[in-house]
Image 1 (cartoon, rainbow, N blue to C red):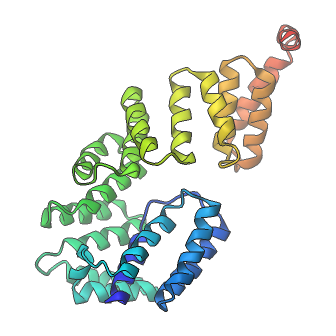
Image 2 (image 1 turned 60 degrees about the vertical axis):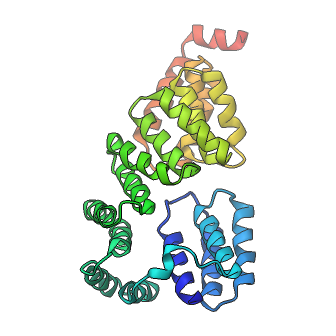
Image 3 (image 1 turned 30 degrees about the vertical axis):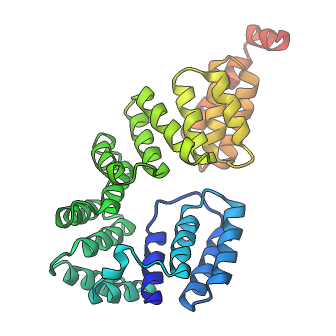
Length: 309
């Protein structure tokens, strides 16, 4: 039974929302997963702790660690107990990398009664293949087969967000939150969809809830973006600066440059965009903005103002 449980936990961890991770984190995760397969749970826990020391926001590591804790403690009260033989077989195909056999077996499992879990894993498989419409169809079939199976609502919302259907994200997220009202990831996804829709007050309220549950750099980054959109440029820039030890991407320097640009601090804006360009891959927008600011600085009145400040 423990091997079955660990297989499910590994699938759930791999299917979680992507996060910014390093090659070291990915290597440590592979090592931990291998230890799980061979039943060496203590060593697996050690490598998961190493990942979370590097990146406390690594959701895959967090999920696997929680699952391991249940297995070690003997807690088998989850839906995992009821996995049918076909789904177990599909998990084995996934472990060995036989995607066609995994798909064929999951399709077969969906024809059985109470097939909500088969549809859920089928959705995860389609999502990994970037076949988003079939993924959504599978998740919807999962909730049709069992209306209280919360993971399918969250997975559906994440896919809808990934493909830019932001207005469609809210309904499945709200349904998910009726079952899991203290899930920081759900509030974060909802906040990001609301941000994309321009509903800044709602976005801030849900971002606050996410941070209250889990005050991590990723959600603080979302908060800084909201502050920028609310024209609170100084506060936004300060928060982005605080996040630099944890997040150093092209996007954070781009936002810092936009804040400085709005504050008419063109020298710092130019330096921010220069760093953003170094971390990006041929971003025409960044190059154009850099040249725009450079031209502004070449104007005598701008140079004089910058010197006086």
